[in-house]
Image (cartoon, rainbow, N blue to C red; front, top):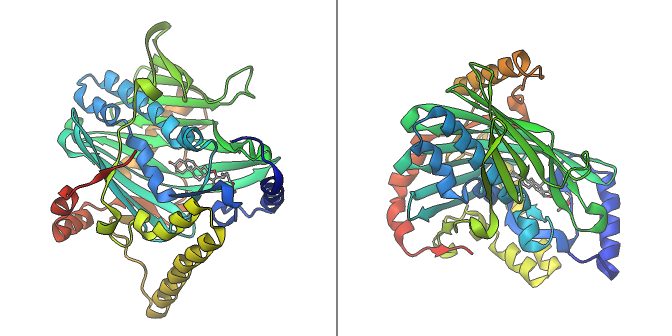
Length: 408
Ligand SMILES: CCC(=O)OC[C@H](C)CC[C@H]1O[C@H]2C[C@H]3[C@@H]4CC=C5C[C@@H](O)CC[C@]5(C)[C@H]4CC[C@]3(C)[C@H]2[C@@H]1C
């Protein structure tokens, strides 16, 4: 985005002042119009699998060590989509719409090689905002599910965001599960009115077959480093041996090494184009589906009519307030359509413990710990029974088959 001029500059300056008194809830901030996106945060779950072939590849590999490397490669390939695709498309990071409780984003990717990969994303909590998702490719038995929220702070003209929640990848064919933690990030470029995401600190991937990856993130401020730098190490839990490293920039090229020898380079962008997500035409969507629910707000944002944006947003927010009031009076709570909150997930706890032992015992690092469930109003799991009820009830197949528009 070109440097700000005129009124945009002054509104941005007052916006920056307002962030300084920021209370930690990103969604509550009223950002200047030009930074508003018409995309709701509930859509961001789709960034996990815009390369369906990479998502499914581990299921086809019978060697567990190579499978763990393929999962690491897939994970690293999602970072560019998750954290820099909006800057690339729109010129800077934008502020997503704050999803209302129960908001849905449903779609699928059709790939000639790996078939259909289904996406279900639901805003399972509004205070604090938490999105839960389930993404699965039945044909290859690959299932990703997870949930996430954000704890944000503001310091020296930077918004610091810690992600709460986890992602879990399950490979049915190998009866294998991977625990994936989420990177911390901060928003740079605020002072220029051109915000973008930089990742920081580190995350891990722990596989139930005994492989552990540690992924370190850094930006250009880092020892002569470049922006969007990443360095990952894949270990064998049993022997403690370092098997592979993958390093480079998560927005550009990554180099895979076995021990010290380079064995592969891979990158994204034109060489590895993403697959378009197919969603139902708005007219056929459920009223809770994001693009239908926010259609009038999106149209107002497209027109640049910020008064109308505000009016249409308030209609949605007031309807939500009335719903919450009614539930309170009736002593009911909103029925999540696809997800259920539980206190704990035994498989996850086992992977957290295994990772912690390896980090402390072999790597001399502070073990990871799970966020308290209260931070995300529970630990959210995809409820297959609820899903099947919806599918059978809705005969979703026929509706889905009726012409779909593939997005850009
Ligand atoms: C609140 C202040 C404000 O509006 O500033 C405007 C600026 C655009 C900066 C703040 C917004 O920046 C956006 C970046 C968003 C994250 C991007 C990617 C992901 C990964 C995804 O898997 C989960 C969600 C997450 C963490 C997004 C969370 C919301 C972020 C931080 C937006 C900020 C409001």
